[in-house]
Figure 1 (cartoon, rainbow, N blue to C red):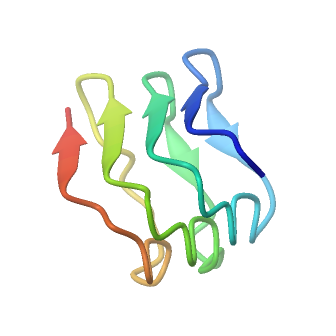
Figure 2 (figure 1 turned 120 degrees about the vertical axis):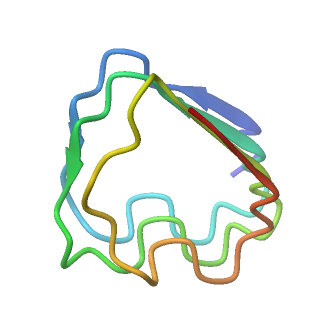
Figure 3 (figure 1 turned 180 degrees about the vertical axis):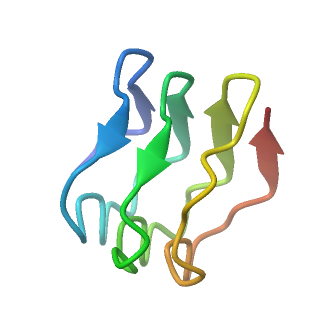
Length: 79
């Protein structure tokens, strides 16, 4: 996929594991309304090696699996 930026300002939760897995071109994702992520989902952003920035609103979701960002290039999380 050649998608570089995804704007999900109105998404409240992510349903499904591996939703963005292997999206190598993805660099930025905006999740300003995200409230929850099923903590069993461990491959949501796996291998998004160019993903360097995630923007949340004022509060980061409380449940992310510790492997959700495995093999990413995360450099900045904005809350």
